Length: 269
Image (tube, rainbow, N blue to C red):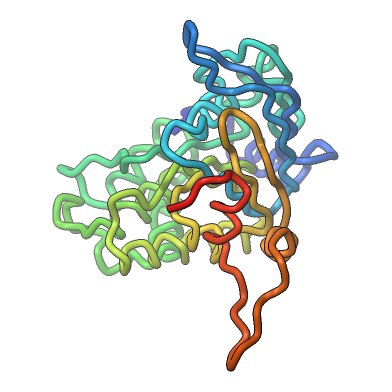
């Protein structure tokens, strides 16, 4: 999570008075590690207030894209803008516009859920951290567990708390890097509900995931990253149209997103 010293009024203004245009705009992004070319010219655009899913196998470069967009890593070539700010030249403004939730919940297990939220609000120098914490606990259905140590939380509860912590300061853009990795099906559904609440509140979400049904459930738009490039980008309905019409026997079999994924990358599982 990114810590800033903006006051609440400034943060609220950032969330509502945003720069016109897409929330995220990427063109020709490249990144290599010695002889390994991870990104080979990535292009993508994320509309404001939408959930955008970036799919790809292990090593496809999903986390590298997130790290560049959150200013944790510098690209070798290409341009990227987040909330209207250039990630290479306006890093402080980008960091003030985003929150990043990584693959593992960054919560303090010794503290209670409420204490975790209050701590982050104080670190951000926000007024009335207790009220901020209570509002988020209610929003993410954690009120009953507010005073319990996080060590007693389930995986889904920890993840919901982690996402709640990332919302402190009202960032207009949130990056969720494989947020349901390692969670059981019930906990995964809890996280899905939390992401839906973010979108309903107008937050832009860039989600990376290996779970194809997760993208089907959550995303307004889906892109597949393969061998360092975006090879398809569209709505779920548009991606399904890439396959031949469904074969009708006794029932109509519609292609799943998994069918589309393996068809476009050319792998057979």
